[in-house]
Length: 309
View: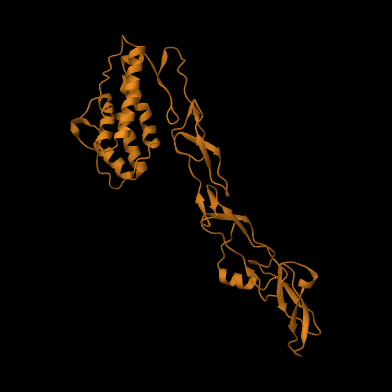
């Protein structure tokens, strides 16, 4: 990974004076005796040192150790060591600078190096319906893949794997909505239907639905304004809310709204222009109602007709 230097121009010009190897012909350089003006061949200084005094016809080159915070990596005859580089944004020191080696940097935890942009970018998070196949490293981004059959993920995460769908095999439990890649299976018992109806089971998948469907900020604001409520009252102002805030407000509504209002949600989505999402939600609700009617025909009094505003 490239090291970001405080003095890139100086660094390049000074490194132009360095040699590329340590062959015998590269361990010396030609100069002039400062007293006689005659040509002399002087020794270069080894890595970790710099030329503090040039040679003469009588004296050899004098080399001195690089002071802290500076280095030379090659045999050289420069009069000053190079200043140690500094790590860039979202980078940490991998190997500290020493007298004969510059520091080496890598992306900090949660980031990876993108050569195209020459910078560290945050690891990608896997969307709902996918899990982490390969965790991100300082050099590679996260690799995601679709949840295997029988599993789901309802979160956005860079480290979470898919979870197995719940089993409805417990005594008295029946499968009323098969799980998908982005939501769990929904189970119900006929006994529970004395106090619950289809919309109550439907609300279980709604928080994951709004995460799975990446709706733009403007659409989410419209949906919040259209959420069914008593007396037709609308939700408060949303101009200062971001996507996470809007989803949180929707989740709060889902948790507290009565079943009749939950049933109106697909129609509310359609009114905001999200007709495809509204249709998918309505189909989910109708499947739940249909399965409940088949499994518990005597105790189920669910109205399968979608109420519109």
